Amino acid sequence: MKVLKDGTVTGTLKKVTGYTDFSSNPEEQSGYYFPFKLTKTGTKMTLKKNGVAQPGKENMTFDPEIIFRVTKTDKFAVEVDGKPVVTFNFQKSTFK
Image (cartoon, rainbow, N blue to C red; front, side):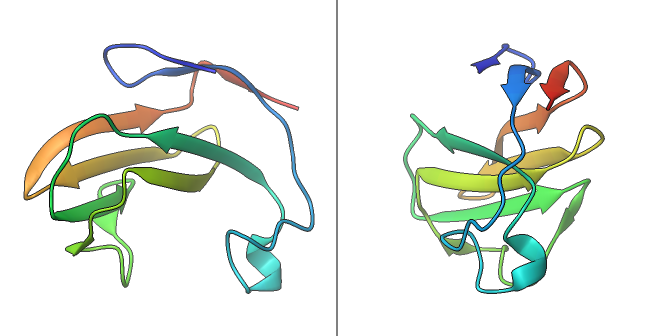
């Protein structure tokens, strides 16, 4: 996987099933997962999927290593201490 300067993710994502480290919810234990590690540091972070922070994903404790469950149309914005860091998009990724 490669992330371009504008946040575009290129490469191939392979479908995973039975992945329990992401969620205890059975509906979220299969799909396409994108792990990343931030080089920026901070104290709080917000993760927004398609422009909206999901419950529990706003002003959470900073964690530089995150895993997103993604689709080709998703955009994930990462904010650290209230400032945008990157918005990932997967339109140029291959899903197998």
